[in-house]
Length: 100
Image 1 (cartoon, rainbow, N blue to C red):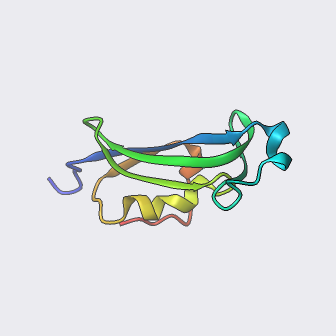
Image 2 (spheres, helix red, strand yellow):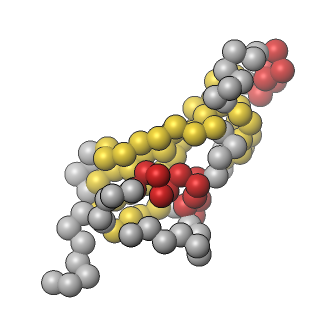
Image 3 (spheres, rainbow, N blue to C red):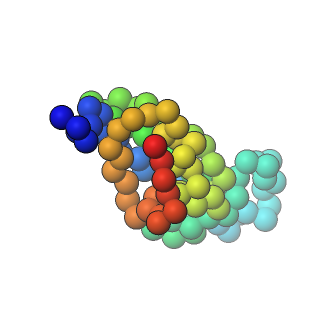
């Protein structure tokens, strides 16, 4: 049938803190890849891991971003070339998002 999807995808992210907030100023070894960001759990210093998973629990795409990068900025890169219905939390919602 037209309009039916054969694949369903879920996308979400999790924080990967590299330092405790009170130690940020003392540690510079990961300064090129880590940054200060905010999640639903509060402030952190590190990276974000973004994962796209299909209906069978198989990871079909993943990406790593700086902590300050908004989730919505990673969507197009992660689902490029995938034809599916995409489910996500509000961090990935945008009126301007148009992924084919």
